[in-house]
Length: 323
Image 1 (cartoon, rainbow, N blue to C red):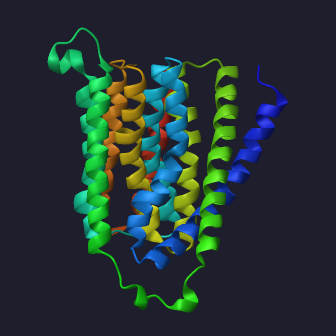
Image 2 (cartoon, rainbow, N blue to C red):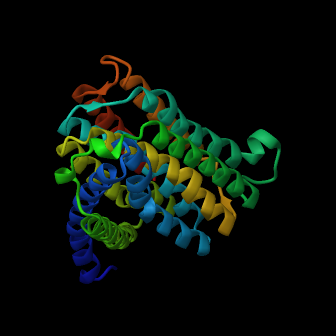
Image 3 (cartoon, rainbow, N blue to C red):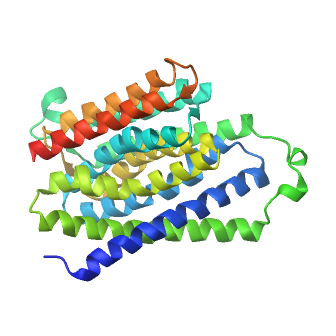
């Protein structure tokens, strides 16, 4: 049974996480103004990396301990929650305008990430292998895709750069303040996320559920809380590009960087039952793409947000029923 301290840290973790996300958004907006790049680039890189750190830490630890179900479930579950839960909540806070580049390039890249992971993991089904796993070579392939994504983002930053003289000097945040806000935001997210995950795992084990269940639900939700806090805070502040960029970037980071790094540390066994969860994650990315095209082009409104949240609840109930 977990100690009282585990559950106290769980509550304190939420406080740190929310405040850390607030600091991170403010620092990221200040950084965008200072260096002259768009909010979407900052969301796809700085914030996406910062909010994906909990997944990275959890997966590295899971790989070192040989906990394959936790590693795979954490990434797949987090990506599904990022779209259906986080963008669902964010769009209810404020309808999210979406750039054409995001619709036709970044969201498809996130969908491609899920497909590549599914192909690499299904050795028996697709290549006649003796077992299904993400081995060292698969991890290298995933990391190679991550490098390609970084080149794309750097190109996007150059194309979308604004002249620094166009940024009002009185509206620019000082470098020291930006650094302090980013460091405080990252620290709050990482520490808060760690406490939340530890408390959530303890809770899950006290309830007597499997590692696969913990990975897909408890860990996935726990490590997705930074994305939820950051995207909701961005939506409240009217920085919708940060909200969208954070989620899409995090999903790409989670598979190509987090899972790629985990596979290079230790081969990750892939259970055939996870194929359904991969299918749901891919379906969520496809649903996101369709939802920002219809009924209102280039906008994720409140109605799709309700559909996202409803779909996520159905999926969670299914996972609970599956055990």
